[in-house]
Amino acid sequence: MRGEKLTDWVVELMEVSFSYDGHEVLRDVSIKVPKGDFLALIGPNGGGKTTLIKICVGLLKPKKGAVNVLGMEPDKARYRIGYVPQDTNRNKDFPANVFDIVLTGRLARKRGFRRSISNEDRLRVENILKKMHLYEYRNRRIGELSGGQRQRVFIARALVGEPEILFMDEPTASVDPSFQTELYELLKKLNESLTIIVVSHDMSVLSSYVKSVACVNGGVFYHGAPELTEEIIGKVYHCPVELIAHGVPHRVLKEHR
Image 1 (cartoon, rainbow, N blue to C red):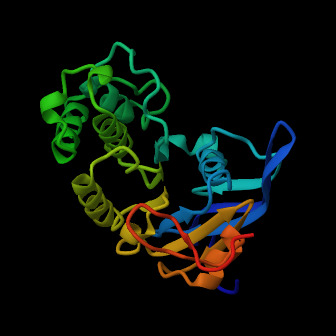
Image 2 (cartoon, rainbow, N blue to C red):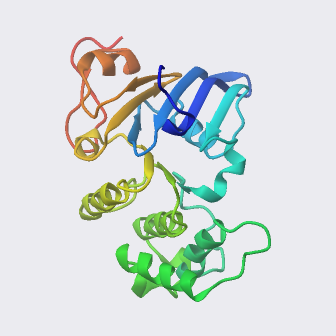
């Protein structure tokens, strides 16, 4: 684009493809995410949303194509990004308490030999635990918490590192409805200073907070606004659909082939 600057884009995928055991999940995906965006990734299960997120944070490498995050390869940008995975139920027997797990989010932002824990680090952990209503659980082991509480712990861990970009894969999947609204209100405020990319099916909630939407189903259909039309959703789900009630990704309007 004319007048475009490199710094205008904090995430850039160019002709990216990815396969699992020969099965192509993403094909020739190209997308640019501007600084300060609040982008929702939606689409059917198995469409490649989680794979796309993992490529952006450097956990997976594409079969072909190029990926830039903050102007560098994803693995080199890890200390500047936050990531909340979809499955937070793994390693429930890990012998660490909530405070220490969230504290690792501060250590992740430090490079080289500067990895000692400071009083500021501990204070920031305390503050984020209070914001996430986890302070009273700070000395409990992660396996002693409910699924929703564990989800909050990993969200807190991602935020405490003060990332420039926050990637979240179904962050409200295990939390109660009251906290969903509370979380998105927090994200809306955080979006004033950082870019957010979130995977979710729940556009009935997200539409009040996000700035743009990308529909992922093998390819990516980018829509630079939070509103979605039947035509755009139809391209992704390959049938005429309509976004409806809380927690339901789509409803078939006509014969579903």
